[in-house]
Length: 138
Image 1 (tube, one colour):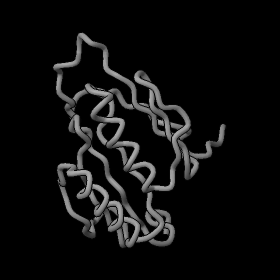
Image 2: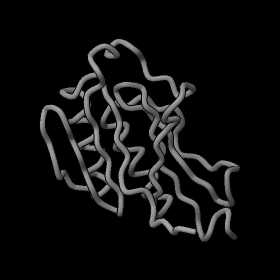
Image 3: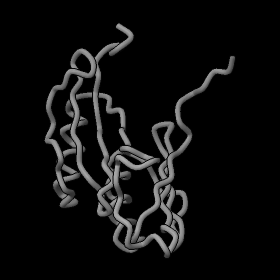
Image 4: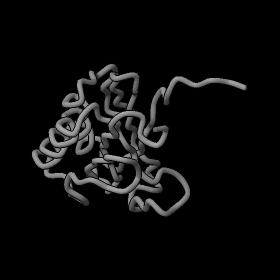
């Protein structure tokens, strides 16, 4: 049996790097991540034992919209350290003029589960949540 230490990174394909890099740079920097690579073809931030990269889609697929019900990524979720951090991420999403799917609220996923859900410029859903204590492991 192997043991893991979280997810090293996630890479997202976007339709317009010029539009998406500023969005992700501002969002990820607000999460105390920092830019490691920034070029027209690749953007990569690290921090909080996490890496997030974006790169352009294949030009043949540029006009295909993101659909979270297709094979592949459903949504990306950051684990926050507090409810206040979830609220701060919500404020950043508002400042980015992201489409807000759900403002911060408690949900039934785990005791005290508190989250916000919004979309990036391509409609990829991004969640941030806080679960007090050990959550499902309590």
